[in-house]
Amino acid sequence: MADLSQIKQEFLQKLSSLNKEADVLNLKAEYVGKNGVVSELLKSLKDMNPEERKAFGPKANELKDFIQDQATIQLSKIEVEEINKKLAEEKIDTSLTDNILAKTIKHGGFHPRTLIQQEIEDIFLSMGFDVLDGPHIEDEFHNFEALNIPGDHPARDMQDTFWFNDPHNPEDKDANGKKHLLRTHTSTIQVRGMLSRKPPFRFIAPGVVFRCERTDASHEMVFTQLEGMMVGKDISVANLIYFMKTILKEIFKKDVEVRLRPGFFPFVEPGFELDIRCLICEGKGCSVCKQVGWVELLPCGMVHPNVLRAGGIDPEVYNGFAFGLGLDRLVMMKYGIDDIRHLQSGDLRFNSQFKLY
Image (cartoon, rainbow, N blue to C red; front, side, top):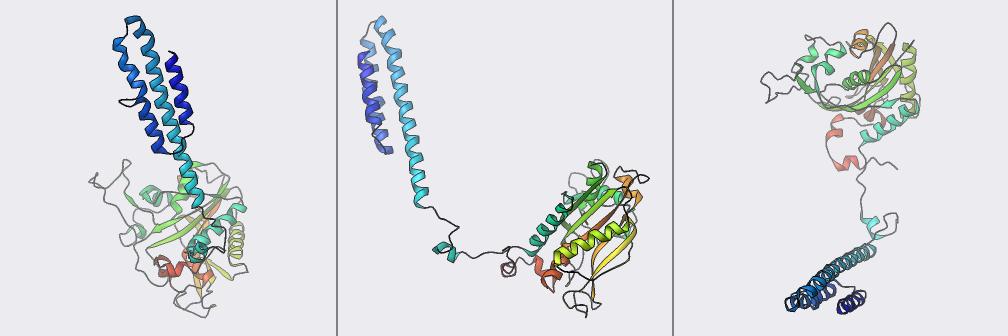
């Protein structure tokens, strides 16, 4: 027993001075390897009487386990020290502007749509609006029916909507009998927003939408919208105009000339088209504004009673307004971009022009 205690102390003394993995492994083999000190002691058990074996065996095995555990702990410490040393030696201070790395790294830039979206979200958040999100793949209820778009509406034609063929369902319908499609507007998030909360409320819903359209200087198949809705009591068109003018003034940092004209949308009544004086040509006429000097920017109106009912809201008690803002066209107006196809080009030379700072 005295030998076991002495062996333990000797091992710990030697182990404490080692700082290399190979040395620790060699020391471990020296004590618990095939011909190690402790292994030789265990071999001697066969020469002991039963009483000695009963007393000595467990202690020797306990020492063997202790040595193995201590060696493992020491190896872990060495590994951590080596990692920390390597990290310290290779550390790069990216905040320094005069180092070689900072001079060679080129900023990729931000997509202008990202900058606009972040700015608009901040503006609406400051006015008490929430920011909601929703799925790209929708069903007929959320994309059409809840928005007062009947089954024979032209927007349901294949020319406008990307429909899905569900391989698991030959009738191409979900459990509720509704076909799936890529959402054609972010108004679907308005429906989900109404169903998930009680009035009064106000929120915006930015997101990508998809329409089967032919691309040109001002139209794309994939583009970004930002829907907004405010529902409460005694809300009027004046409230709608105030918020729209406020957001445009904040974005363009100046008063922007707008016009409000009647427009038909199944989900609002009355409905309006809010146009902005083309900032590309300053109203003189160009390919973006189709030579008319105005750009359709913001369809809006008072929420239709049928839409409120579909969202679980009593139209006899509450009313509200809704609007849809085309972020791509807003980007074009703000930065003077004359072709919407640049926004989807994926060209880093285009993105590198737009920086946050």
